[in-house]
Length: 81
View 1 (cartoon, one colour):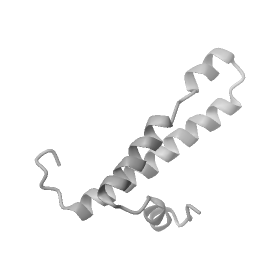
View 2: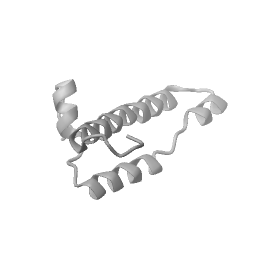
View 3: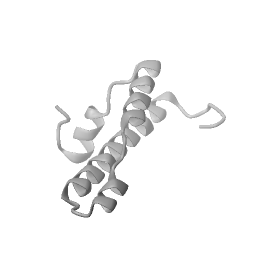
View 4: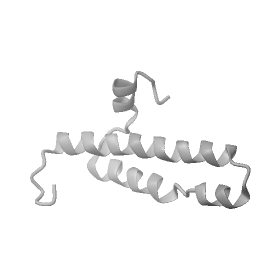
């Protein structure tokens, strides 16, 4: 990947899978934060996903890839819609 020799199709799947993983990561932290009663621990669980969303939006636009929903429905059996 660093040398720029990864085929574009493989890079596309890599980006989509990263998007799915990070969506789950942020969702898990949001659920934990909502259930936590200790204010200090609640603050530690708070994650700002702004950069994550902007990063993937930019990658999808730059490489003209469809969003991860297609891959997610294939790998999890659930639709993103």
